[in-house]
Image (cartoon, rainbow, N blue to C red; front, side, top):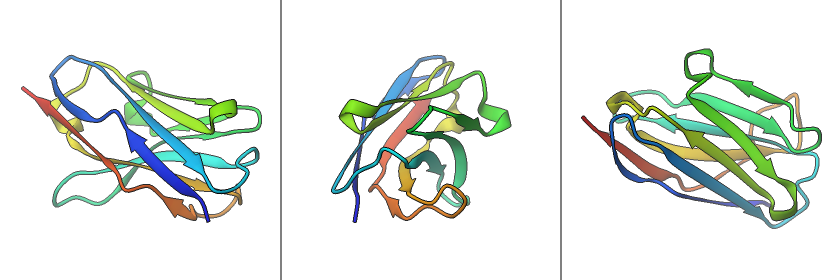
Length: 119
């Protein structure tokens, strides 16, 4: 079973930037698809972006494309989420997840990191 640890969350003013990290351990991740999700209080969890470790193919939520960028460091088993021009509505708990099965759902999830954007 994979273990995922997110970091990099915090409090930032509107218009600012943050970079989240998610480091995976426990098995080989070379073929995984890893994704970032977020959940705001009282709202459903929503997909942000994903990346396939092998080849680096990315996929984004359309509404966030251009402000958020996902990347990975295969050697460190780490995925990043660069967030720019942050807005108060980006306030949420951000989670990373991973799966070995590119056509299926995510198998393992991190504990989440809080991002708060003040106006």
